[in-house]
Image 1 (cartoon, rainbow, N blue to C red):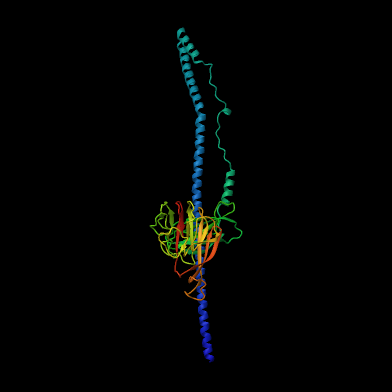
Image 2: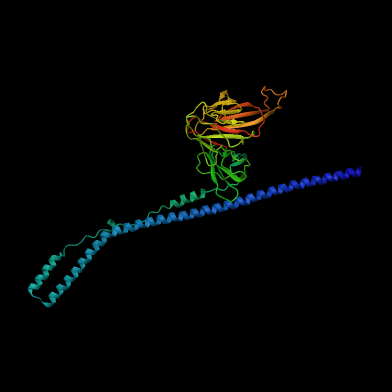
Length: 442
């Protein structure tokens, strides 16, 4: 018996050692990932710094060369402008010197040859015509341009001060992505500050496909800390990152650690071919396009794709005239020819904010729909009943009870919805009596 106990204890020790080794291996894997992140981010930071400062050097060289050329051109223009009258004066003086030399040669020749009085008279008359007593005035040096360059050495100090403050390096961004939650054809991204000393005013969320290494694109810029990124292909991994901008600042903080995620849920789509509606290429946007005299039927989803436990969102991107028959909502089955969702086995909100459950209007109301309004439907199963069960509180024999929360703006309405039968999924729909309404579903 003692030997069996010792063998059992040895087996337990071996199992504990295996578990211990497994946990250590997992921690080693985590440490390797951490080291990879440190080395990879440091390499990217170095590359970004070298690229940025290289671009700055090139840009500064171009700006300095352009300014130098501009100033040299000003010097050339001043030189030409200042020399023009001096050159003209010089030309006139040289002409006078030439005339005086010619007159001297002629006079000396006349005296040596003892020419007749007529020749001397002619020479004297020529001398009078030259106006030997008339001299051009040469400007004093104080009246002549003295071109100089004024260079303020303080620009070097200003530039030095700016360069010293330019750029920064940090090891921990002030904001990080905290949660990714898949939605049909979309992803709910939540983030939060991790640096309490950083006062964030705006956030900027970007995403890109994980494969291929393409450029990031903006998904959201604003003050909220969560957003649903739509138009994502299912089963395709994307990378998400976020940065923040402080109070009074114009520059964005360093990016958070990229977080990868993908949605396995097919995107919600409107059913094509319904009179009075035009759909986008992805079929997730519906626009009420015309006003048929006979009325416009309800536009349903392409299938029962909404399941309890998910959030269904309608985003109003254009508005028209409101009508009491309008509505956005969820139903169990489609009824052809219906012009409203205010009926049995359906819940909806009208464009005026009224909430209807199985065709009956509730006392509580939500804000009327406006441009940019987002209406959310959240449902969860709270009770299941068997038909004919004594525990069934409904005389109609409902065998499922859903807790429904409809939100619009900062308000929401919560109620229980009894269904006659259990369903795997629900249809969603919209109906508008007038044109101009446009709704995105996700």
